[in-house]
Length: 263
Image (cartoon, rainbow, N blue to C red):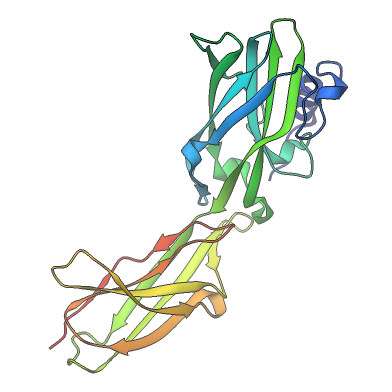
Protein backbone atom coordinates (compact mmCIF):
# COMPACT_ATOMS: atom_id res chain seq x y z
CA UNK A 1 0.00 0.00 0.00
CA UNK A 2 1.28 3.44 -0.84
CA UNK A 3 3.07 5.44 1.84
CA UNK A 4 0.91 8.22 3.24
CA UNK A 5 2.25 11.62 4.33
CA UNK A 6 3.82 11.64 7.76
CA UNK A 7 1.30 14.23 8.88
CA UNK A 8 -1.54 11.81 8.23
CA UNK A 9 0.06 9.08 10.30
CA UNK A 10 0.75 11.59 13.06
CA UNK A 11 -2.89 12.64 13.06
CA UNK A 12 -4.12 9.08 13.62
CA UNK A 13 -1.43 8.42 16.20
CA UNK A 14 -2.70 11.42 18.15
CA UNK A 15 -6.33 10.36 17.88
CA UNK A 16 -5.57 6.86 19.14
CA UNK A 17 -2.80 7.72 21.61
CA UNK A 18 -2.74 6.95 25.30
CA UNK A 19 -3.49 10.60 25.99
CA UNK A 20 -6.95 10.01 24.56
CA UNK A 21 -7.62 6.32 25.24
CA UNK A 22 -6.79 4.86 28.65
CA UNK A 23 -3.95 2.33 28.52
CA UNK A 24 -6.14 -0.35 30.09
CA UNK A 25 -8.51 -0.09 27.16
CA UNK A 26 -5.88 -0.36 24.44
CA UNK A 27 -4.93 -4.02 24.76
CA UNK A 28 -5.76 -6.03 21.65
CA UNK A 29 -9.18 -7.65 21.91
CA UNK A 30 -9.81 -6.53 25.51
CA UNK A 31 -11.78 -3.87 27.34
CA UNK A 32 -11.47 -2.64 30.92
CA UNK A 33 -14.20 -3.59 33.42
CA UNK A 34 -17.23 -1.36 32.89
CA UNK A 35 -15.95 -0.26 29.49
CA UNK A 36 -17.84 -0.38 26.23
CA UNK A 37 -18.27 -3.79 24.63
CA UNK A 38 -18.70 -4.38 20.90
CA UNK A 39 -20.78 -7.10 19.29
CA UNK A 40 -22.54 -7.99 16.04
CA UNK A 41 -19.63 -6.54 14.06
CA UNK A 42 -20.33 -7.08 10.34
CA UNK A 43 -18.33 -5.78 7.36
CA UNK A 44 -20.06 -5.26 4.01
CA UNK A 45 -23.06 -7.34 5.00
CA UNK A 46 -20.84 -10.34 5.70
CA UNK A 47 -19.57 -10.52 2.10
CA UNK A 48 -15.94 -10.61 1.01
CA UNK A 49 -14.48 -7.30 -0.18
CA UNK A 50 -13.21 -8.27 -3.66
CA UNK A 51 -11.04 -5.69 -5.44
CA UNK A 52 -9.69 -5.56 -8.97
CA UNK A 53 -7.06 -3.14 -10.20
CA UNK A 54 -9.32 -0.08 -10.33
CA UNK A 55 -12.29 -1.13 -8.21
CA UNK A 56 -14.05 1.67 -6.37
CA UNK A 57 -16.66 0.68 -3.83
CA UNK A 58 -18.30 1.73 -0.59
CA UNK A 59 -17.66 -0.52 2.38
CA UNK A 60 -19.98 -0.47 5.38
CA UNK A 61 -19.27 -1.64 8.93
CA UNK A 62 -22.14 -2.17 11.38
CA UNK A 63 -21.83 -3.00 15.07
CA UNK A 64 -23.51 -2.82 18.47
CA UNK A 65 -21.87 -0.76 21.24
CA UNK A 66 -22.96 -1.45 24.83
CA UNK A 67 -21.86 0.59 27.83
CA UNK A 68 -23.41 0.79 31.32
CA UNK A 69 -23.24 4.59 31.09
CA UNK A 70 -24.47 4.83 27.52
CA UNK A 71 -22.51 5.64 24.38
CA UNK A 72 -21.95 9.18 23.11
CA UNK A 73 -19.99 8.27 19.96
CA UNK A 74 -18.37 5.24 18.35
CA UNK A 75 -15.87 4.57 15.53
CA UNK A 76 -14.73 1.56 13.53
CA UNK A 77 -12.20 0.93 10.77
CA UNK A 78 -10.33 -1.91 9.04
CA UNK A 79 -6.66 -2.59 9.61
CA UNK A 80 -4.13 -5.11 8.33
CA UNK A 81 -1.00 -5.64 10.44
CA UNK A 82 1.54 -5.34 11.68
CA UNK A 83 -0.25 -2.97 14.05
CA UNK A 84 -3.10 -0.48 14.25
CA UNK A 85 -0.74 2.49 13.92
CA UNK A 86 0.36 1.43 10.42
CA UNK A 87 -1.16 4.06 8.13
CA UNK A 88 -0.33 1.86 5.15
CA UNK A 89 -2.68 -0.86 6.37
CA UNK A 90 -5.75 1.01 7.54
CA UNK A 91 -9.09 1.74 5.85
CA UNK A 92 -10.14 4.46 5.94
CA UNK A 93 -7.08 6.55 6.80
CA UNK A 94 -9.23 9.08 8.67
CA UNK A 95 -11.94 7.06 10.45
CA UNK A 96 -15.22 9.02 10.58
CA UNK A 97 -17.55 8.68 13.55
CA UNK A 98 -20.26 6.12 13.10
CA UNK A 99 -23.94 6.97 13.05
CA UNK A 100 -25.27 5.43 16.25
CA UNK A 101 -28.88 4.94 17.31
CA UNK A 102 -29.71 4.34 20.97
CA UNK A 103 -32.06 1.43 21.58
CA UNK A 104 -35.58 2.69 22.51
CA UNK A 105 -35.77 0.03 25.23
CA UNK A 106 -32.18 0.01 26.51
CA UNK A 107 -30.23 3.29 26.88
CA UNK A 108 -26.97 1.35 27.38
CA UNK A 109 -27.05 -0.12 23.87
CA UNK A 110 -26.51 1.62 20.53
CA UNK A 111 -26.49 0.23 17.00
CA UNK A 112 -23.84 1.90 14.84
CA UNK A 113 -22.94 2.13 11.17
CA UNK A 114 -20.13 3.73 9.17
CA UNK A 115 -19.49 3.74 5.42
CA UNK A 116 -16.34 4.75 3.56
CA UNK A 117 -14.93 4.60 0.06
CA UNK A 118 -12.25 2.14 -1.05
CA UNK A 119 -10.27 2.79 -4.23
CA UNK A 120 -8.06 -0.15 -5.19
CA UNK A 121 -5.82 1.95 -7.44
CA UNK A 122 -5.22 4.42 -4.62
CA UNK A 123 -5.26 2.22 -1.53
CA UNK A 124 -3.65 -1.05 -2.66
CA UNK A 125 -0.26 -1.72 -4.22
CA UNK A 126 0.84 -4.76 -2.20
CA UNK A 127 -0.62 -8.21 -2.84
CA UNK A 128 0.26 -9.18 0.74
CA UNK A 129 -2.73 -7.09 1.81
CA UNK A 130 -5.10 -9.77 0.50
CA UNK A 131 -6.58 -11.94 3.25
CA UNK A 132 -7.99 -11.29 6.71
CA UNK A 133 -8.38 -7.70 7.90
CA UNK A 134 -9.35 -6.79 11.45
CA UNK A 135 -11.94 -4.34 12.72
CA UNK A 136 -10.84 -1.86 15.38
CA UNK A 137 -13.80 -0.45 17.29
CA UNK A 138 -13.79 2.54 19.65
CA UNK A 139 -16.36 4.30 21.76
CA UNK A 140 -16.79 7.29 24.09
CA UNK A 141 -19.34 7.00 26.90
CA UNK A 142 -21.35 9.69 28.67
CA UNK A 143 -18.61 10.05 31.32
CA UNK A 144 -16.01 10.75 28.60
CA UNK A 145 -14.36 7.38 29.18
CA UNK A 146 -12.90 5.80 26.03
CA UNK A 147 -12.66 2.17 24.98
CA UNK A 148 -10.77 0.71 22.00
CA UNK A 149 -10.74 -2.96 21.01
CA UNK A 150 -8.20 -3.83 18.33
CA UNK A 151 -9.96 -6.95 17.04
CA UNK A 152 -13.70 -6.52 17.44
CA UNK A 153 -14.31 -8.46 14.21
CA UNK A 154 -12.71 -9.52 10.94
CA UNK A 155 -13.28 -9.21 7.18
CA UNK A 156 -11.86 -10.85 4.05
CA UNK A 157 -10.28 -8.61 1.42
CA UNK A 158 -9.60 -10.51 -1.81
CA UNK A 159 -8.08 -10.07 -5.25
CA UNK A 160 -10.50 -10.09 -8.19
CA UNK A 161 -10.12 -13.11 -10.52
CA UNK A 162 -10.88 -13.67 -14.20
CA UNK A 163 -11.48 -16.94 -16.02
CA UNK A 164 -11.63 -17.71 -19.76
CA UNK A 165 -12.75 -20.79 -21.71
CA UNK A 166 -12.57 -22.11 -25.27
CA UNK A 167 -14.01 -25.45 -26.41
CA UNK A 168 -13.07 -26.93 -29.79
CA UNK A 169 -13.54 -28.17 -32.45
CA UNK A 170 -16.78 -26.45 -33.40
CA UNK A 171 -18.86 -28.17 -34.71
CA UNK A 172 -17.96 -31.66 -33.50
CA UNK A 173 -19.36 -35.13 -34.13
CA UNK A 174 -21.19 -36.82 -31.26
CA UNK A 175 -18.86 -39.02 -29.24
CA UNK A 176 -15.72 -37.28 -30.45
CA UNK A 177 -13.22 -35.50 -28.20
CA UNK A 178 -13.72 -31.88 -27.21
CA UNK A 179 -10.65 -30.01 -25.99
CA UNK A 180 -11.37 -27.27 -23.46
CA UNK A 181 -8.75 -24.64 -22.66
CA UNK A 182 -8.74 -21.48 -20.57
CA UNK A 183 -6.82 -19.36 -18.12
CA UNK A 184 -7.27 -18.23 -14.52
CA UNK A 185 -5.80 -14.84 -13.65
CA UNK A 186 -6.14 -12.47 -10.71
CA UNK A 187 -5.46 -8.83 -9.96
CA UNK A 188 -1.85 -8.09 -9.10
CA UNK A 189 -1.97 -4.82 -7.19
CA UNK A 190 1.82 -4.44 -7.35
CA UNK A 191 2.19 -4.66 -11.15
CA UNK A 192 -1.20 -3.24 -12.10
CA UNK A 193 -1.95 -6.27 -14.29
CA UNK A 194 -3.83 -9.57 -14.14
CA UNK A 195 -1.37 -12.44 -13.66
CA UNK A 196 -1.76 -16.22 -13.81
CA UNK A 197 -2.98 -18.10 -10.72
CA UNK A 198 -1.22 -21.46 -10.71
CA UNK A 199 -1.97 -24.70 -8.85
CA UNK A 200 -5.66 -23.96 -8.26
CA UNK A 201 -8.56 -26.39 -8.62
CA UNK A 202 -11.08 -25.33 -11.28
CA UNK A 203 -14.28 -27.15 -12.26
CA UNK A 204 -15.15 -27.94 -15.87
CA UNK A 205 -18.91 -27.67 -16.25
CA UNK A 206 -21.42 -28.35 -19.02
CA UNK A 207 -24.95 -27.06 -19.69
CA UNK A 208 -27.15 -28.59 -22.37
CA UNK A 209 -28.77 -26.30 -24.90
CA UNK A 210 -32.15 -25.01 -23.61
CA UNK A 211 -31.20 -25.91 -20.01
CA UNK A 212 -30.44 -23.49 -17.18
CA UNK A 213 -28.35 -25.90 -15.11
CA UNK A 214 -24.61 -26.55 -15.29
CA UNK A 215 -23.22 -29.93 -14.25
CA UNK A 216 -19.63 -30.44 -13.13
CA UNK A 217 -17.78 -32.91 -15.36
CA UNK A 218 -14.35 -32.89 -13.70
CA UNK A 219 -11.85 -30.83 -11.72
CA UNK A 220 -8.75 -29.46 -13.43
CA UNK A 221 -5.67 -27.82 -11.86
CA UNK A 222 -4.22 -24.65 -13.34
CA UNK A 223 -0.70 -24.89 -14.72
CA UNK A 224 1.97 -22.38 -15.66
CA UNK A 225 0.55 -18.88 -15.98
CA UNK A 226 -2.84 -20.13 -14.79
CA UNK A 227 -3.38 -22.19 -17.96
CA UNK A 228 -6.13 -24.80 -18.15
CA UNK A 229 -6.45 -27.68 -20.62
CA UNK A 230 -8.53 -30.84 -20.54
CA UNK A 231 -10.65 -33.07 -22.77
CA UNK A 232 -14.13 -34.56 -22.64
CA UNK A 233 -16.59 -36.32 -24.95
CA UNK A 234 -19.16 -34.50 -27.06
CA UNK A 235 -22.60 -35.74 -26.03
CA UNK A 236 -25.05 -32.97 -26.96
CA UNK A 237 -25.28 -29.34 -28.05
CA UNK A 238 -24.39 -27.12 -25.15
CA UNK A 239 -22.06 -24.81 -23.28
CA UNK A 240 -18.75 -25.54 -21.58
CA UNK A 241 -17.36 -23.29 -18.87
CA UNK A 242 -14.78 -23.24 -16.07
CA UNK A 243 -15.71 -22.34 -12.48
CA UNK A 244 -13.29 -21.24 -9.74
CA UNK A 245 -14.81 -21.08 -6.25
CA UNK A 246 -12.15 -18.76 -4.81
CA UNK A 247 -9.47 -18.97 -2.13
CA UNK A 248 -8.53 -17.20 1.10
CA UNK A 249 -6.92 -14.38 -0.91
CA UNK A 250 -8.81 -14.44 -4.21
CA UNK A 251 -12.46 -14.08 -5.16
CA UNK A 252 -14.43 -16.59 -7.24
CA UNK A 253 -14.60 -16.47 -11.05
CA UNK A 254 -16.83 -18.01 -13.69
CA UNK A 255 -16.06 -18.13 -17.41
CA UNK A 256 -18.78 -17.27 -19.90
CA UNK A 257 -20.04 -20.53 -21.42
CA UNK A 258 -18.65 -21.48 -24.86
CA UNK A 259 -21.22 -23.17 -27.11
CA UNK A 260 -20.36 -26.31 -29.04
CA UNK A 261 -22.58 -27.63 -31.83
CA UNK A 262 -22.68 -31.43 -31.73
CA UNK A 263 -23.71 -33.18 -34.97
